Image: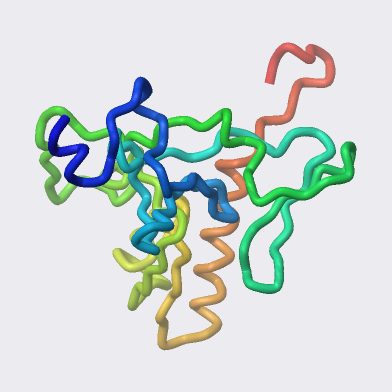
Length: 189
């Protein structure tokens, strides 16, 4: 407890309670970050628990997310006709605990990029892949894109690069579109 007091983090009853001078905020895409107004710094981890969080679900009915002239996100409550910089979903945050394998995973020449990336969220990452229109480059680009990364395909041929992009988009649509129900028996797909 002395270490917490020395670091300026007074002891409170709740691990989730923020120390004085701290504020919880969200990014446009729902990640929670913490602003330390005393030191004028921000960080992703909660100052006491060290946990990362994100907001769960969509905005409540009647709410809209906007951005002011300074690029800061604010929220409009159309039902009560008010605005706030506090995300109304902050009460419903979930911990962002990436799944870490208990044993070291071994990969070999038969491992696919999809197997290696399984369970990883690459949203917000930008990746450049050379030779991405065929072979290993294409498989790597496809796998990274399907896991949320923004992938730039570096290819010699623009037409072959565009074909590769179309194949990746078709795979994405195939994976994200629910199967059509059988019209004669709606409980079967």
